[in-house]
Image 1 (cartoon, rainbow, N blue to C red):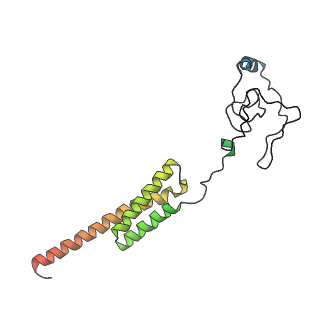
Image 2: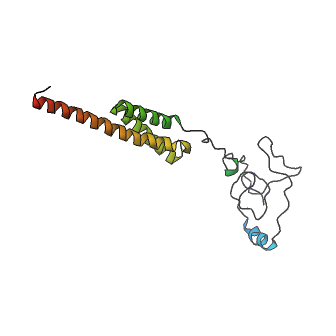
Image 3: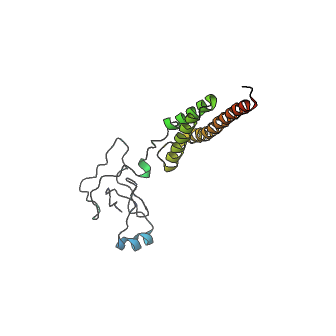
Length: 172
């Protein structure tokens, strides 16, 4: 059976092209015949190309009649190269660092920046736009930013309550 996308020769029992990973469409006349024979159409006359080779059809080769002339897909499962194998993204690292600085310095605006960066990175990871390896940093940055803002606001409130209490007692 020939692939309608790239024209590669495949076995009758294959559901996806071995060259471009496109779904194979069986012709209506071959559906009943291929299932009853049980034997493959023929062994592969030429191997599938590697990344540095190009597939050269033999002399006298004519593709399947439904061949549309598309180039082989570079986005199939077999050709996928993960772009997101590296470490955590800069946004995840920044969320963690800013949140730690916010907690140490009791600076609630920096905590808000850590919360925003952490949430943006968690959303990007969930949608697949950022590497999965930064998820823990983004979560820690997000929750540490929340804790830093809470601690900063608590200390600020205690400071003003102490100032009001000293003013009320007249011992400032």
